[in-house]
Image 1 (cartoon, rainbow, N blue to C red):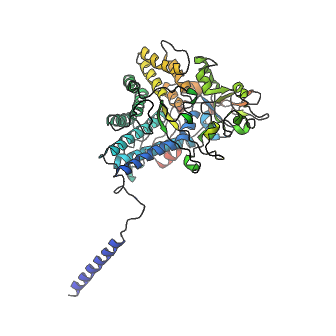
Image 2: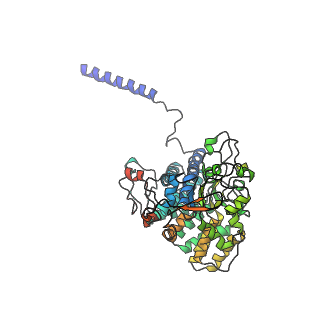
Image 3: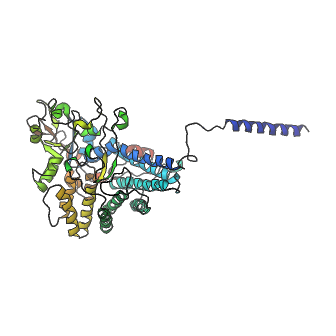
Length: 517
């Protein structure tokens, strides 16, 4: 009997405790989980917008990092060691813990993670949900295109990882490209990606044509010239994009979402929320105003602020001249010489120098009205254009030229040349198409990956870092030598693949570092 009473007592106690636990099982306010989120259209939209935001946040690493790895620019700034990280990139003296490269690498995987969340949790029930899923595939493919073309064989992550999967090995090149092609093809064929109504229509969303452009580039990088040419042709034949007439302002804040923009990140002028707009990019690549004559920029209608990084190299200037002459429209819309700047009243202060060969970027100048918040240098409402229609035309020209269709290549090249007010031709060599792409898209993040796939990076940049140019107020350039050992600077064979970040190598024993690093 006693045993029976004990059992009944324990059962009652268990029931009571269970009842108490049920009362204490209260959902935490303000917290969502995978069981309750991503199920509505509103939640699907919030999930995919996080991908757009992640892309926007990669702007500084993307622009500074990629441009420093080319023969288009010097690190610039007010003097040596003004930004040692940029100099290290520019002179190829960097190691595996390089900040801009790690920032890019991490950000691409951040986009991939967010895209995988969308694809893993957003249902396939409504048009908005299906659009979010299609856009997520484009974002994932874009990120992998960037990773493959610069790092070679990064880990393939096509789903949300379980803790046991965190240390992923390198992916295979073929399977990585296959994922890119599959994602883009499925997104394009889904019928849910946005399309503009006409060339003058505006949208902030990923479009079908942008996805096609990425697919065309994936084919081009793999030397699948037939597929690349057909894909680019389909964009051109759509008539939904055209070249913007005013090249001088094609990427300016006054030309947001113009007819040439394939995709751009949207920014708004919000003086009351400076940090929401904080990128510093325009500050970094605008003229080194503290080294220039007082008030000279303001007198020329430019903003009186800037740190002067990314100064054009003379070789870039010379390629412009070879195509359109010293008085070329596109050349003068892109950069100014020291003589042209002094005519505007802009010069280096006497007794000062800046890192420059005597050329100044005009294409990404900051005008006075572009700084909407008085006294706040960190507000920038100039949208980042990630791809222009000009790139589609130039990639199409290259694909057709490589495929033996010289007439089609010339047709597309002449569209670019006509807008540039440069001489047109009946045919173009591959080298001429490559040079055209360099000058048309300079500073827009395409040159480094092009140089790698064309196999010209070492020849073009093996001596980069042998000297640093210093410009004084008389327009004289001193080639200052800081390193006499050529083994310690310049592009080497190992640079054909960027190093996986040191942090990644230390935390992930399963990833194999690229050769030479």
